[in-house]
Image (cartoon, rainbow, N blue to C red; front, side, top):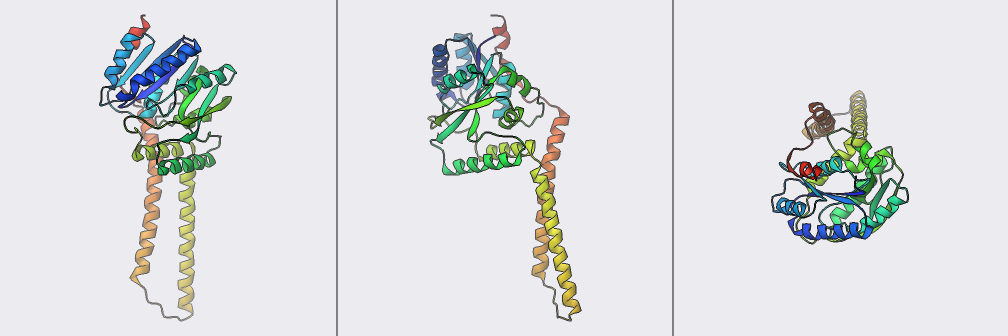
Amino acid sequence: MKQLSIVVPIFNEEKNLSSLYQRCIAVVEKLEISYELIFVDDGSKDDSLALIVELANLNSNVQYHAFTRNFGHQYALLCGLENASGEAIVTIDADLQDPPEIIIELYQQWKQGFQLIYARRKSRKGETWIKKVSAFVFYRFLKRLVGFDIPLDTGDFRLMDKEVVKILLQLKEHQKYLRGQVAWIGMKSTYVEYDRDERLFGETAYPIKKQLKLAMDGITSFSSFPLKLVIWAGFIVSFLALLLIIYALSARLAGESTVPGWASIIISLLFLGGIQMISIGVLGQYIKRIDENVRNRPNYVVKSTNQERRASL
């Protein structure tokens, strides 16, 4: 068994791979520990996989798994965790925005007895104000919704003890939101602060669409707030309708002349229709989660790996 496993999800990161590899190797050499470097290619369209295979041929401590298509960042992380054998496991992205050198501090905290060490961002270079503000608001909003503590200003860069990973892999829901699941476990934790660097090459693998999906998975995985919101919206609409009924009856009994207008009818219909559509959409998200878990399809499909070859070394 290795002392440290480093899990790296890859999606179109050919320009960053060489530097990432060299910096990770420098880290483990400085720590003077046994290690394994696990690359998971999430259906890259560039030469990332070819470079990973080349690194694996040069270094027997490099393990790789290549997906048949793009299954998503969370599932690439999951694959790496399922194949990690280290006493401590680090997850880090390949874009080099999270400096691999911070792994040394994470490992030192683990040696002090902490089972879960987060890398907390002090600053985020090279990111738009929209992304910074949306991330700031979302994680604080999510923290208020759930019934446990979710560390703020952290991502998927962290070190976990093997016992944490063992429990994490027992959580079988298919819509993975690992940041929430790791915090849900509730092990002894701490954090190391760092300044997040700017991406040098390539484009982010998390455009707005994927960020919104991840946010939806996070909320629906750990909170029933959307369902409660729908219920309260229903009560409010019903109360407003009751007020309108009382007003109409009062006006009629008072002998006031009332001329029905199409504007009020259309506005009422649109308002009620909107509430109904939102309600159906929220319920649909929860039903979809149930449906996907009932199907029990595999989270990902691996087309090639060197795991078997490495097992025989």
